[in-house]
Length: 175
Image (spheres, rainbow, N blue to C red):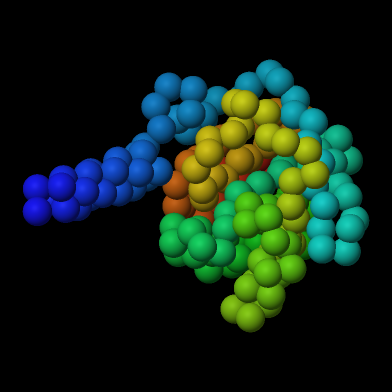
């Protein structure tokens, strides 16, 4: 009986440890970055048709990268406001949105988006994320300015409909 009790208690503590570790707010370098960083990132992405796009090709545009997965509740919670943000900015030639599948199954994610009526452009990483962008948590939203420099990295769910966020994004596209 004691052995069974220890196993149950151990399982509970391990589960809590994993839950808190996966949902804790990042600190230090992993915390949200709000000031531009001088480094330019070289990443490339691939869509479901095999078309590749690199950040170098997107220079001159603000790039909004959202790392997400179909199994991630905070990712799903923010998806409607992210899709609406994309729809509101889709005709602005100074901004690009990349919804980056972290499931590892681009077809599954494409079906997921289509079933829910989302129109975000879906990609998967073709290169690995540099350490300073890799949070190992999703959702993560990365915003690069027109020069390809990091302006903001937000770990966790976001309300992309907030006036403050939209105003800041519009200012970036106007620069």
